[in-house]
Image (cartoon, rainbow, N blue to C red):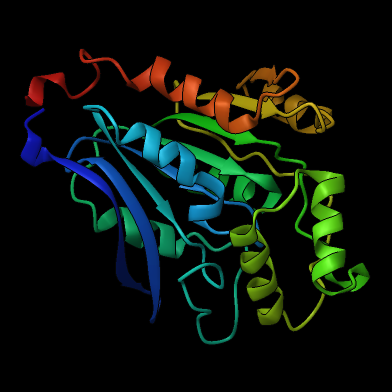
Length: 256
């Protein structure tokens, strides 16, 4: 890739569904796309900032896009509030990127996993889906006691919050008009032919056996990775991305 075709990490905005979507972008200006979806209550920068910085440090054969979901980070709430399972804004975001040869999706937490699977249903170019702790629910606002309670919830279920993460959570909580409903399992739609699915768990996470069984029933036996002590699901995701799409002879080598 030429220097002019590479992009450092930068924030951009686009209009979708009558509102604005903020997203971080790094990597090549054309070719394959990796879309990173953060969990409910955090933001793209909090969830994936470290990975974006690492991925943008060397020539890639792909573009990395990490949007702030509606009502999160720098993306305002659309009129009527957030629709958790809506993928229309994601389709608009991808349409703004021009021709996409191959699309890979990474999703952290339950809501993002549901969005990624729903989006993949009608996207034949989706080659890989990485689900990061997909049984991690959104914080239960009905049982939390302000900032201290939210920090304690994250430490129990995931990891200690950074100052930026704490600000994300409290800003998100302020947009909620009612407690987040807890649904049962994650539905698995029919996925594109050849699409590979991997599920990554940290040492604190409990495996979602129901999801693994549903994927296998849908003909997509998932690769399951349990990260070791001191490792995070982001470490695993970085390895997965680099092994699949990171070499110089990758899917867009013929565009050089």
